[in-house]
Length: 587
Image (cartoon, rainbow, N blue to C red; front, side, top):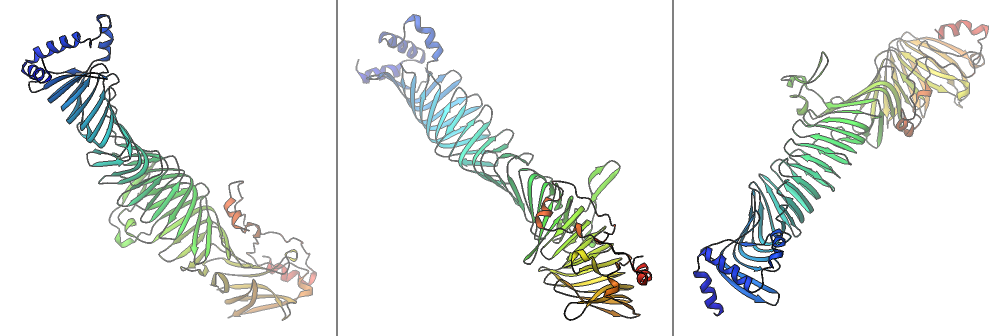
């Protein structure tokens, strides 16, 4: 029987007869193993040809062994895997096959289709090529080439592929997908698109069931209002929660935050940052450094702890502010209030925030609480609390505030610093105002002093230029001649007083209205220390450098202001002639 007649003969047989004849023929040719080795063959699970009325089968003997050639409506099986194609070659001894046209591998819950299949039956490994699609019903993996393990249901590609899960599409250069565990891994030019977000990376792990993305390389997550950069971490796209335990950053329209650890909830808009936190408030042109921070994307509120330092730009001069805690938020415009929203409960106390007004305001404010220290090249300060608002560009220093500018120390119950985009313009002390400026060498302990109910000062190039004290102004001033030699001590009381500065020292004091004046020659003045009633020289609290501010509180706790006057370095006993004057000035 020739080859053609043999093919016609097999085609004419029934399915049952085809199987019997094939097995007999293979046994006759010595292809089937001996009886004592049939158990090993069963272990290997030979590829089985399923009966089909439209299939043509040809037996071919080649140099590499016997081959079955099947054409039209080919149906095969190995274990729980069913394979279909237009045509196939089965290498009988090696238990391998090649399949062509409309290739399908079907298992419970899984299907792979392609144009071409090369399959190794003993290892259950498949290589598919041309329009490859691996699907488990709802998720589809597309590629031009795919390595598929029938035993584990794992598909791997190396030359580009795309995974589609509902509305989420993920593409990459390489990757794999496990249809049993729903785990996937993607490497090289990874790009994720979703109606709610987009991701770019070089290495991502993804579970199609939980929809949790794990970032294993530098990655970027973008949504309609924020951009997230991370080195590693997870993104739960169902709950929209990000957790990153490596250096990461978050940028929205008003705020930038980066830290060693960053957690973010897209639904609530709430984020936390820990470890070398850097936060940039673009509206206030301020940068905050701290160890821990919390931020609400919805209310635009920021809460920072862990040695926070704020750097605020004033033209070319930078102001650094340190506090135990910082809070920043939008300025609430009262006439836009609509409703209050409960955001937290602390015991019996309810914390309420206006979510309607806060986000709509483009102006922001911040508050620093406790152990506040301020440093710039031209001005330094300490206080217990500080606030700043873009609404009026005013910095408020509260609770035992002290400000130093040039050689002058200014204190009061509260101190207000008025600024613009370039510099500090004005200082205002609304009550218990006191100005002290050291005159002469430190060892001499000579101090020019001015006090009154209020004090208003004006600045030029961030340096104090003049002060107005009103009312109940008092002054002790060491006057000098044109050559700078001391003449004596002026003691003055009046309703209004103006103080002018030249270089670093007080140059002139002018008195107005109800003036009371006394002059003590220098020879007599040196025998006594002159002090106004509110005198407190607290130079030891003045920040000496930016590094001192940055280190404040880290190495050791710095004692808060005592408000006790510092005694003179070299006390001088008053002479009998000056006992009365000294008694009045030291009350």
